[in-house]
Image: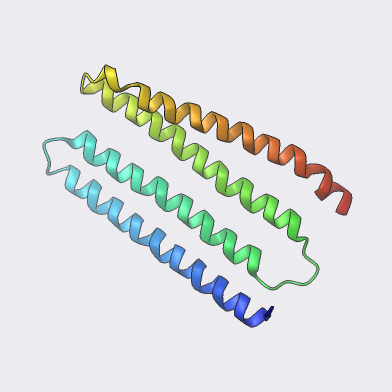
Length: 149
């Protein structure tokens, strides 16, 4: 059952849901930022707002990728589109992980929780492994995309 209408409808529904979720997270980050001014711990409120924005950006990239990948277009190269979509999404996730790790390091340093610093280090190491995996993916798929062009 390979109907283009059903495929496009499902892709539009999922992409719209991800866009709504992303915009909701932007609104939630504004609420966290606003509440940070009235709390005793301003830094924690700002960190919550920044975390929400990172997740919103990754969700937005996912929605854009779904819109582009499943949009019905004649003559487009599916492998190139998938390669580009995965690269954009994973890049946003890597940036979010690294920034999250750095924010955790700053937070733990301010709260004198030096014993917990292995958590942000693990996040940064995981982001490094993900970056190496993305590089390997791009290297291995380069020949496929170039040979089809």
